[in-house]
Length: 341
Length: 256
Image 1 (cartoon, helix red, strand yellow):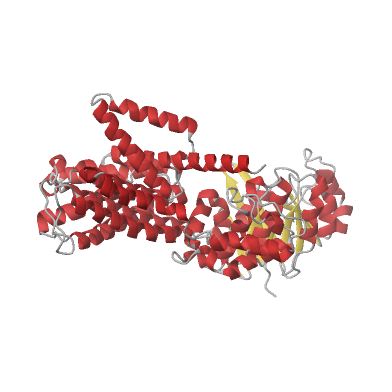
Image 2 (tube, chains in turn red, blue):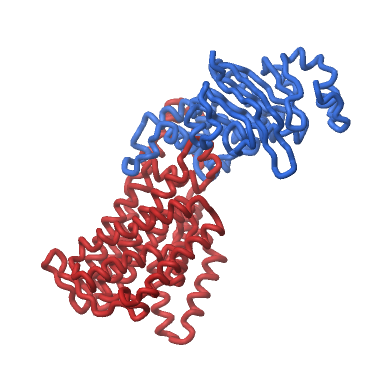
């Protein structure tokens, strides 16, 4: 961001302007209200599509957790579904086997379980980077999936755990057929988690993550405990992915081992890249665009719908390298430039 | 007095290639030392061994009397050992100011904080601006590093090392790749460094070496060839033969 200085600016003014950039960066901007307003508007405009809407919001949350590690810390993983799956199965097994059907405490349990797995696996895996890390994260998800398959007497295998029931929210709000309650529930959880993630991203810790992404050699040289930082953020992201998985199980009232699928890991990464990485809101846009397109194409042509998704991705790679949000930013800069002279 | 940096019997091999041979090196507090030697003498390898990027096959490294041979690179940095890189290692996609704030944040443990906004601590930003001020980089504070000319990027590289508040500073060819019209900027900064910091500079430009250094160590084929004051080195015929004459091939007088 180049700032042209007026010739007569005093040194202090220059300093103040420079400092102001950092001091004000974490402040909320009005445009940030847009996705939330849109989510609330959808509740009123498409009351019959809220079940689908909840699924989109769950994926937004999942993509948001990936943005924290991929977009900010630069950790490339193809096994993020592992944590989504742990969360999904924590509440699924809790409800099916132990009668733990209270939804909110279920979310916390899911977060703790998946964060724990994230901590343990991250401690070992995050010594590696690049392709090695890609393979190892992928293997982690497969291992968990196969463990579930091995003990299908507990997990229900690929038939899953159908017909789960959960207690009404706060003991009062029951889940209706149209998913009104579920939609607002997921939206509220997303908002709370988003607030946490946003604080982390703009914290000194979040800056250090960006530093690791930008130049890990330099981070070592300035004394950053890189491994500890990566394991910390990986654990947090795993916990959030677990919450997304738990919401998935709760809103669908069933869960199968397909939550651990490679497909799920790849899909969330595609969504994030489509929306734009390292921007928080890329998760919103990417998940929404991808899922609406998927829904639309699959109705248009139940056999060939994947062609449409493929085409979308090719276009994104060709014309929107930095995702849809990046496209918006470029457009904004272009317009600002044209206005100036 | 304990030496700021004390290297003893340092060896490193890559397979059959013995790149560092029994290197002993001592920097007293406030030292101004130049490390010179022909290309491939193992100068950067030595810096990498001292800073912990590489592990030595044998030998020890002491910083202010503490044995740091087994500690990580980051731990050494936190104990006051800073370096610049021969090829810039900067956060290219971030602003100059952010590059400095990151360094100060990691130095002070600020970056352990997950909750407070990074910009909320004015003292960090002010210190970062002070460092930029002293290198006359304030006007570039909000520019992305990758938008800066290479010479200015080299200054950011030094600014980061200074923001670490080092006790020992290793400068790996600070003016490398900078057009000669701008290199004086960097050399002025190097000449004006805090007299308490022990400085080791790798440099090819002999004018710089003789202007800056009070002592010179000559490294040839991974081993310390000789060591002395600039005058001694300048008068040493064998050094002239292997290095100043750029005639590294006949390798005469390895036991200088």
